Amino acid sequence: MSAIQRTALVLVIIGAINWGLIGFFQFDLVAAIFGGQDAALARLVYGLVGLSGLYCLTLLFKPSEELSTEDRSELT
Image (cartoon, rainbow, N blue to C red; front, side, top):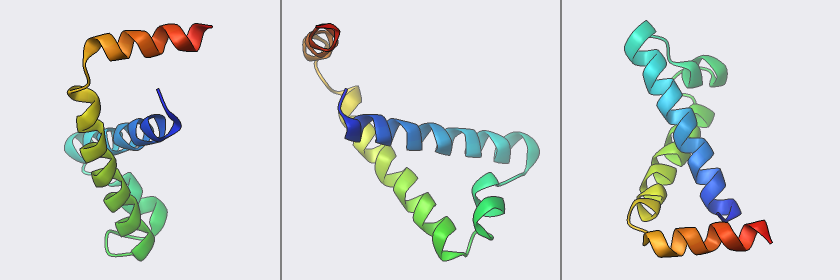
C-alpha cells in the first residue's frame, strides 16, 4: 500500500469516526477541534476527508491479484 493510499485511508477512518460521533452523540469532533463547521480549517479537513473517500474507491475496484502481489513484495 502506497503512502498516498495509507494517508487517504487514515482520513477516511477519521471521517467515519466523526460521523459515528455525530450519529450517536450529536458531537462533531472536527468542528470542536478546528473552531466550528464554518471555520476554514474545519472545511479543509472535511474536504480532504471527502477527497480521500473518493480516492479510496479505487481500492475497492483494485484487482485482488494486484493486492496480493503488493502484500508479498512488502514482506521481502
